[in-house]
Length: 332
Image (cartoon, rainbow, N blue to C red; front, top):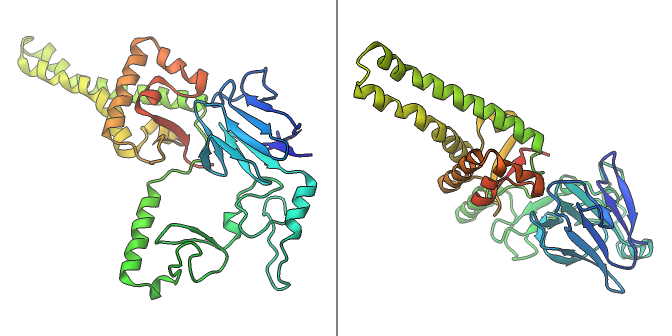
């Protein structure tokens, strides 16, 4: 019987036998599989059995679903596939007979290195991205390279890309144009964010916001001292004191917009190990997203925190929705 293993590498690991019928997954208690996570929608996804195979179907969830690291709406499931729903991993295991049939087709050379998962010591095949037993990532255990011409993933020792045929020679033997293409690919790759990074917890975001509000208030108070001194000790109608009062008023938006646009995180978020990224996969947010986030932030403050409370519904605040950004942990 096919199985669905929830969080296979966690102490809370749970195995569920998949029936030959539809299986609903979501945050609502009426679902067949309940995941208590604010990032999971009330009715997030379905696993459907079509008579021969199991299909995954995303029910237009707010935060979407990832299958083996790629965002999907509907896909056939194969043995060893790993689903990300919110911060939870779900490992799909096909029926035993199907797994044994697939493994029987692979005959390793006697001199080849035994490939075993570093987490559970279970054997895996060349080309597997995730362990079929525990769901651990296997990229580091294989000789994996990326073609600089087409960015295809090449598994195992190889001299040429199996997608476009370009050379995978070491840097010393590459042509200048080839090296330039590789450099461009590397720069493009650094602007992408790992889709498996988990969303920040409500507790961490709350602590980060508290630190930032205290820091912004301290900066405003510090910049208010010069104009206040001029007002009290000199002419109370002095235009200089009035002009200087603009500085503390501007310090509040400059604090948030400046740190968001330049570092993708305020000091409070950096202290909590959080990062602001765009939903389209780009790592850095620009000045436009920072300004839109600040407008939504101010609306949330004016409405007595109503915009902040939206995080309890689907894991996003009002300014996250308006700027199309998300707050994630810097590392797993």
